[in-house]
Length: 77
Image 1: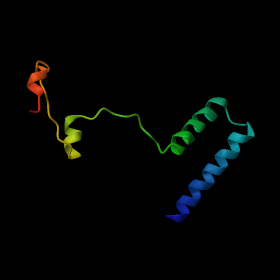
Image 2 (image 1 turned 90 degrees about the vertical axis):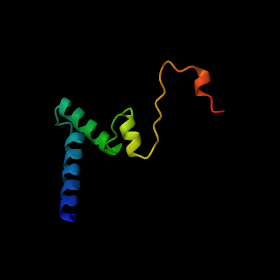
Image 3 (image 1 turned 135 degrees about the horizontal axis):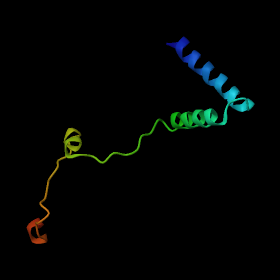
């Protein structure tokens, strides 16, 4: 595994040198920088609205209330 990580680091160093040299096409440089920024951010993906199934899988109870229920119907007393 270590040789693989070393190779990845070396490739990234070469790419950084290419980007810094100014010899890379502007569009390619922009793509590469965007890719590196995504990696640096941890590859965060946009948030997804949780579905009842997703919540249930996480152990969160889901209670569905009809849209026609009045406020009195929802009292806890």
